[in-house]
Length: 250
Image (cartoon, rainbow, N blue to C red; front, top):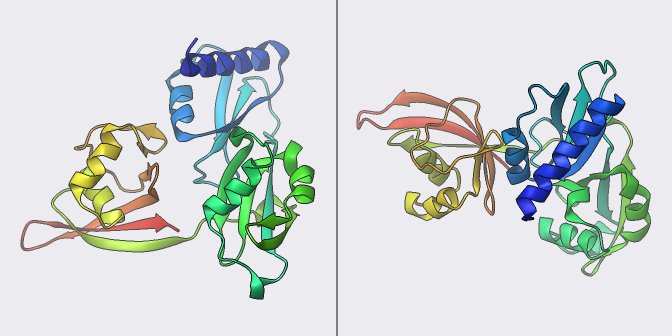
């Protein structure tokens, strides 16, 4: 059985377990491709609703909650958030997203147990499965040449949200390839392989058409490049081009 088929089978099993036992069931963290596959499964007549959450509104990696229709309590997702920061900022390396993720995975942790990693000025906030929280607090003590400490953010209301920067410019139209090229300051031809290769997601759904029209508020994720939200078309120029505003996640 192929990997995708195994994944779909697992999601179906979680759905059935939620329905027949009348309990909440949860997946591990799902990437965009897995979320897309989950949305393609027909759950309409199963007596179960699927809800996604990754710790904040626009999280890329999210857990799926399978909620029986008769269930009336709030979904309590089994995720936690840790802030990892240097013990001595003065002598710390400039750590990247890859550095933090690599240090965590080198502990033998499966990627599906780790959600988004949000970079801050000299630290990072890591979403993880609650079962790993204490382990990570004890074991994450050094990243590259930098001694670090990990502390849990205990209140959900204190969970971090990603920073965004405004990007504006003109495009011939609000086509997917044109907007991505503007967002990452590159050419349309260079982004086509990402789109045709299934690496572009709009609002969590895979889009493989270069000419797909972006709408106000759409969130576009490009694997290997980043994520941004399309703002709006502000006006049309004298050269029949469109001035647009978007917000790229830092």
